[in-house]
Image (tube, rainbow over all chains, first blue to last red; front, side, top):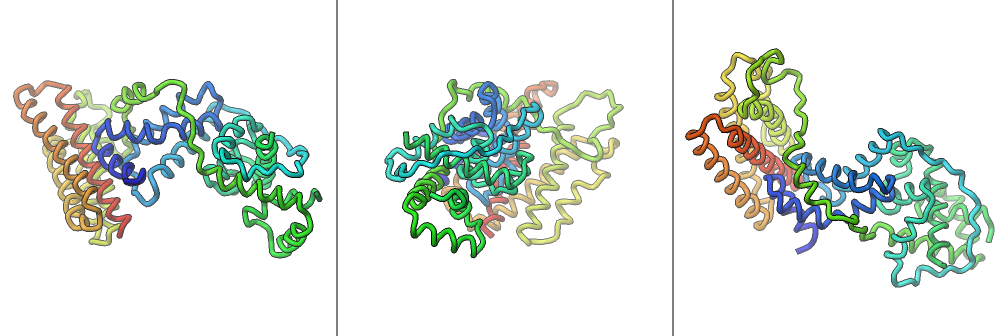
Length: 175
Length: 225
């Protein structure tokens, strides 16, 4: 049984009020939602945001039509909620201009066997503006025009921050 | 490595270069080993990024979440309240059900239309303004509308169950049976203790769960149509 099958059954049970089924959904997805919260919000706000995401999802379960994977739907709910949370808390958006990043000649990171885990750790070290765009674009699959709307930045800024993030990650992963 | 080309590597990966710029960059890549290696590394990062595992929160948040699941009520918005705002009558489970059924009935209509099985008149009729008029008997309204909304959704489920796999249908039926048992048990108990607020809330919550479950199930069928 795939995770998608497990999710589908548990969504049905949870929509019928089954807390155990909803806890299983929580356990399967909380790590990614918690990382999203850490990357998009202040760390001190992350736990509260994660709780709010799952409560909102519980309340909206009956609107989940099953046309996408539950995880995809959950992440959309999470990102929307976290972005709104930033706005209401007046978090200042960093609009750093992309500094010139010295490009290493031969990092060779594509051969690293632990690349996925290493990227996840390295994302923590990115400057906020670059991190937010990298998380939304490369990790969550948002388009630049969507990111521009979510973060209230220009699409060109989103593109340059993304390129900057990728180069910084390459640099970080090569060390 | 040439800077103008380095700056275009992400755009190349994301398919955002026009034909001319892409052709120029590809020509350059054929001559520049550094840019070729950088592109390979960026491509590896982009390919790996969506598959992150995430990191659990430092403490288990489930207990706090579970405590809040039933206490935080979704606000029900309606152009007309189910009871007049000036009323001093206590807010009973029957009012709660009446208000929530207005929303549920509209949802049922949406599913009806999505499945192309008919016009939405029947389900939407349940949400016409007169049903929320204060002079109506709320108890009768709640029971009738709940039964009507459930009947509509059960019909859709019966008609579309072939589109769901057996395991899913079994899950739905088991869950519905548990909810029905809970409703029946609470209804029997409240006949012996009509003023019991806890039992009233239990009945209202389980009726709402049944409607939610039926709506999710019929939406799943609609998604497979």
